[in-house]
Image (cartoon, rainbow, N blue to C red):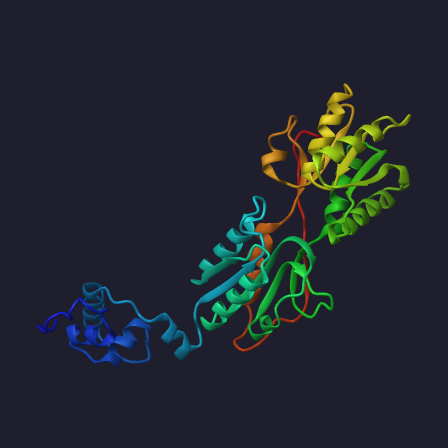
Length: 343
């Protein structure tokens, strides 16, 4: 190794300093760092360069390298509340693990629904030349994302645009509603109530459609009196459940729009002196484990596939040839049944 002195410590080390300490050219340092194999560089020289890098604590300029190679090895994820949502953090985990498997980093920004933060985050990621972007939301609904989103390969997660002009990965709400209802039918239930959300959203329509399809496929009529709507909280679901159980011919099973409503249904069933699942079976939706796994008996529910959606989004971006855009396909991800003791 060269006997020349180390650079002064009042400035960060540079590639020039590495080259001088290793006794090679800056071009050779660049070839070693970027693992260029088309140029013959001896292992002894490579070892000397790496020794100089470690001795100086030099770090390659990732921004400059991305400008040169057009590969930043970075993906971006912009969300509204998905990072702080207890049952959606797994979306980040799925995306991060898929990115890291391909030696990519994931930049994550939570906007709290603020358009100014969203726009700033997008510009930040564009300036850093992210190779792809995930635009995600806390709950499944239609969005109007920033126009600049189209400047980079983008996939929407848990949301969609009205004209379906952007690729999206969304939960299969119809399949989820079907799966929940079918699980009850297969346990012998024929009078199955459905307590639905009252605020219009894709999940409301999709889960109701799944409920209806399952009944039809098994030759069971849809009884309008067994389909009720309320706000998705335990208090309102408690009231609706009591009303359902006061029918002369009460339902033997209840499918709830989400786990919070199932919690209210549990309370109503027990207050009326009935047992779960012996007298009334219950199925929820979301697999919010703070509720589902802690209720007694533990709640059978349908999981929203957040981990799978995050993983699939990254894999789609990774499959894209450089310079191309993803086709605007709407990818529906199945919602699995998590069976516990409530049916």
